[in-house]
Image 1 (cartoon, one colour):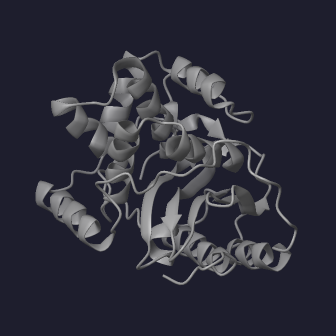
Image 2: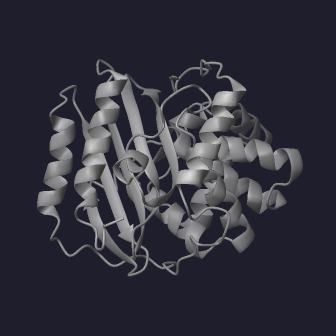
Image 3: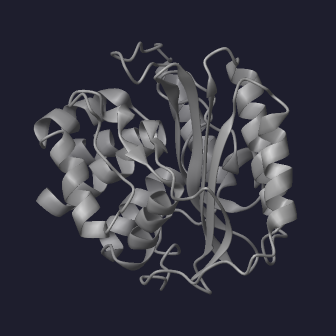
Length: 293
């Protein structure tokens, strides 16, 4: 666990656990190592049809039942139809936590191409195991808040802003809509080589992150058996617990970009929060076309 407003306290994880987790994730999560995540939803998706009120209510209920002043933002886009499937307070910025590592990686690719050799290993760890040491190094190396500003301009992110404290990358704020826009660029605008590199790392996210946190909450637990490529986020900011589950999900016949961003007062415990997010994503899953996996 870490605080977005402080230097992250890292929990040492045995190398064999991380490697074992990566191998397990790769074995269970098909779709990595190729360009299978390419989609054509480059333009703004069509507005939702307004038929998902009951589904959103079920997702909200999972968080409301926990107390501790829950806040929730949702955006799910069908990348095949290029249409918003489900949306709730999707334009409201929230602390991104480690989800900002998507922007750090994209900015690096823009500046120096797809990483290779040792740098490829490091960036892979940043995306899959959510290694903060790599993120902090790249943040400092490439201009800190300027990374967010460059990617905001390039991707047209209307509700994304860098942290007030330039050294605290995890306090970058993004809306669910902007997170999904980042995934739309990844699947439709990024080079095939870059897309393959990033999605392979995200598809091999081990259960135990680099700091020991169980990052298989939300999408990985709710979509068991489906192909996914995720970037999760967790931490504390401004007296609130932050828990974000975001990524790409492929069902039997559809591909979705998903962003579920939640926070509570810091009185909530992590097991309660992660269970609530997983339950909420499970409720949202039922609304998706061809959700059978």
